[in-house]
Image (cartoon, rainbow, N blue to C red; front, side, top):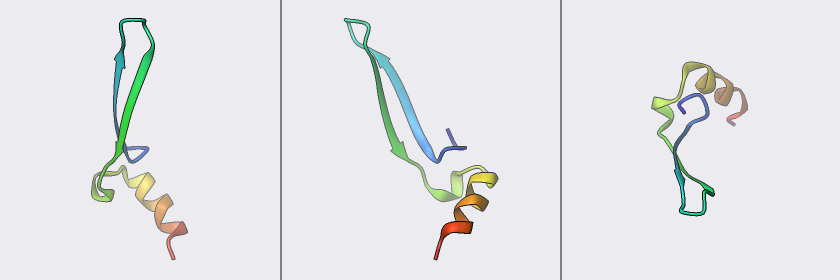
Length: 43
């Protein structure tokens, strides 16, 4: 999900619960729109 700056994986357990695992990705791999938005708020 480069538009959110994260990598995600979804799994279902035997009881059919949805499990999401996520981690940050390097800023260089973010969408251009997300990078521009982030730059507005950096000090």
